[in-house]
Image (cartoon, rainbow, N blue to C red):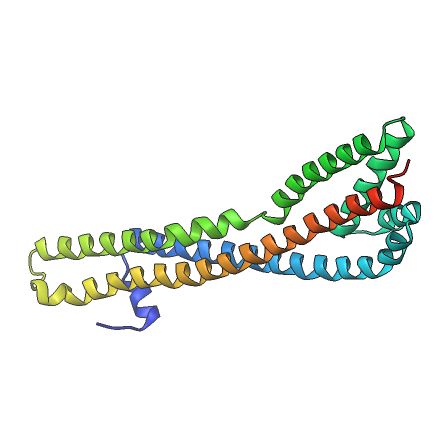
Length: 223
C-alpha cells in the first residue's frame, strides 16, 4: 500500500475522487465561516469596548440624549445599536404621552426583538460548521465504501490476480474515512468554541440592555 497522496489520488476511482472533492469543499467552506465569525467577534468586541468607554459617563450622569447621540454616530457596534434603540424607544414613547412604566416595557420589548435579529446575524455561517461536523465522517465513509466496491469489481475481472492484488486498493480506500474525520473533528471543536463565544457575546448585549432599562427607570422614573 502506497501512502503517497499523489499516488492515492491518481489511483482513486472517479466516484471516490468526487467524494474527496466534496470533503475538500466542506473543509474550505468551514474554514471561511470560521475566519468570518472570528473576525466579526474580534472587531465587534473592540468597537463595543471603545463605545462603552465613551458612553458610560453619560449614562451614569443621566445624559440619555447625549448617550443617544453618541450611539447614533457609532458604526458597527452592537452595543451602540442596543443603547440607541433602548433610549430612542423610551424617549419617543414618553413624548407620545406614555407613562414611564409603559415606556420602559415598550423599550424592553424593542430590545428583545432586536436581540433576536442580532442573534441571527451573529450565528450566520454556523450552520455550515454544524453540517460539516455531522456529515463529514459519513461522507468519508461513503468514499471508503465506494472504493471497496471498486476493489471487489477488480477481483471479478479475469487476470486480476485475486485478493492479494487489490489489497492495496482496499487499504487506500479506507484513507477516505480518515479524511472525513480529519475534516469533522476540528470543525466540531471550533463550532463548540464559537458557539460559546457567541453565546457570551449575546449575553453581554442582553445585560447591557437590561442595565439601560434600569438606569432609565432610576433616573427618569419620577416622571
